Image (tube, rainbow, N blue to C red; front, side, top):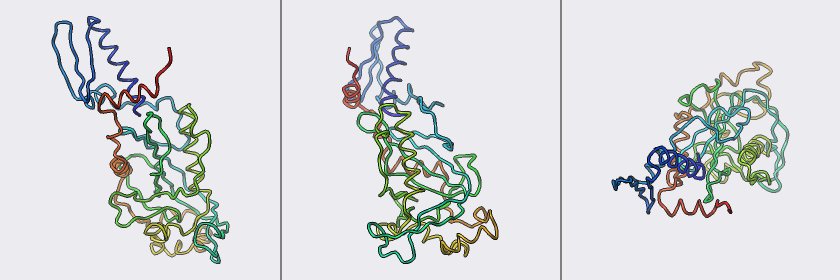
Length: 302
């Protein structure tokens, strides 16, 4: 649910309510207050934010967007929407920094191809509404592991033992497992006026950035560390990427038994942290000026 959709919903429901009455009820919005006046002269008022919450309550609707395969839930607060994407266990082919790389990251980094098994991969894809009300892929996306398929938003998440998934210390006010998007390359489709196309394009670009760009030591230099470095001691089979490559030969599903580091957070709690960090509620229209900006930005010529 973004600001543009909420405005349309507000207009439709207010119109329906007025038409169901005498036809002369009047609703005006001034500042951050909405005032209703009846034909008999009675008046009632309430904060605009509370009115928007009442008439645009949560509902099971994707807003005309066909969710990509693997997206198991969509959460919205204010102008922020999060897709919860799950990828099943499997062997992945990655470009991993070579032991003899002359540079730890950036230009000059040398990579080699590795094939390692991963458990369930959970990605929180975060879209944020710009001033126009349209949603765009943000840079606040996070990645996690699980050892079972996700069946509830109240199930726990584990940190992903991957380079390019950053650890911050202290984590307060920061992502728990931030996906480094230095090499994310936006595509024209991400700006398509069709929301179905633009959101799907953003999702695909992020997924490629996570799984297909080079894994290097950028997080060790720019953040506290990567979650690969932080996880190396939890199991000898993942202590090095070389050991990780060899482990499936002895046990093809060993990644579902590794004691990955528990985030002590559920999917719902991580999403709540994201909404708070991005000040999602502040992106909801709260006064006449914010509604006016949406109308002027999205006006339709007669």
